Image (cartoon, rainbow, N blue to C red; front, side, top):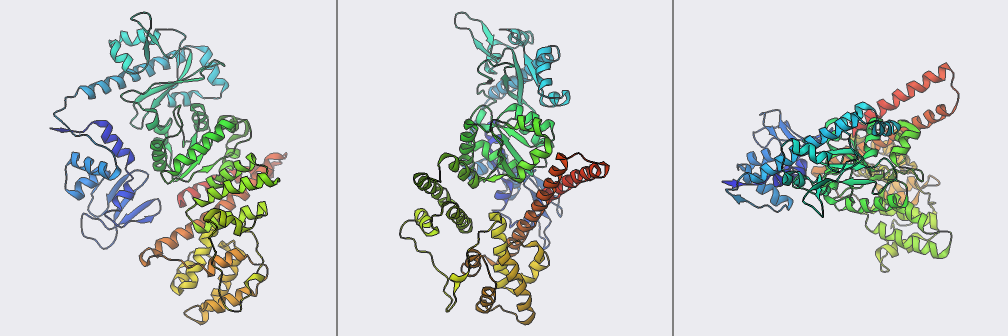
Length: 601
């Protein structure tokens, strides 16, 4: 009999991105929060095959087939369960050992550790209910009884062997208790001692609701502040995230927020932020980053604002980039952590942190500004060289150009010099080459638009210039009021006139018209008229839809920004009855707008 151990199966499940893997067999198109395509299991002309990236399942409304990625591979490749696991493991680069006639002893050992952990969690929970000091500590941290129960918080009393004796009374052997990582051997005798003593206890629970380990926190200034379970046969710190079990249960997976500690996750959950997770006593790992990628459409990082937190954030950004994650960073005031900020300022102010979140590039630049004094010659040179190394790794040429322009404006170093630093001294930028066009007369004006929105507007205008069909497809979904770039707005107006009179745009004539408008952004004009878009014909509709979505979402975010500003102004003043009612309505409108932004994404 062929046997694949449970760790391998779970590893394959956790690492499988169902959308990516099924895309190897079916052409999928984004539709709302899901993906749709023609079913591979029966003949159809209208797509009824749906894949959910958040639930990691597929379902066909035509023939009824459905399940997870393993079921899909079994059906599509006509293989049994072990061969499906083997095939997926090979695709994912996971080493797999097939064992023949293996007995169930290892499985029984793991089951026993899960049992012991569950018993220990119940024991700690009962201790908490009967000890005033830890209850007072949690009360002072504003942790409600309901949330204590949801996270299973407990207390390890100040005893060397109380847990050990309790587990022995449940007929577990010394070997089994030690294997769970809850006790250690005494050096000068054959006895055992409890590893967790006089600590608030945080059970670590996996997405299958099994207690796999514990974290313990002191209630005073003793060190170490936190003590965590060692790696065991059921627990590896780098493979799990604290709070993920509740994210899996409660969150809509539109956002996931990475924080540093247990208390941050719990405090945020108590305030309605049900999508926060924390790494478990170690620096973020690639494995954890892959899990985060699966559980949130938008990824945010909010570590402590001290030097250690900044260094940890930079490390997390680098680790996430290895799995193609580009997180946004929430910036806290000096000396604060998310728990402190939420308690002092409340959920509305915390929501503003998301609105003002830094892209990971902007965060790195922000930190470099703190490190180097750019008002000195030496500091400016070092800062620019470091930033050049960051920009060099940006994949999008448009985003590169935006950051080059931004750094040039801030340091007064020419764009050409920064570009040569990035691309080498032999770099020569191609210039626009229309005859008799004095493009140098166009004044460079820095764009204030976010990079993604700026790029989307430019790409939409380029596509509208390219094809009349694209133009009509776009104007059915966006109006001129949805554009923010002055250059794009003016070209949009010209296109209305041009397409009323002809089928194909003469770019030279259009360019001449645009030059008649004063104070245009030279960089934007360059990007629209010089660099042609190269898209595959079959991808155009999806590309346009994605670009429209980017523009629409940005406009909703702008509206949310304005709403938050108005709420903030009303918060600061003594309100009369009318203003108080307006304040309440604004808060309700903000919640509705947040939901719309999440649904649209």
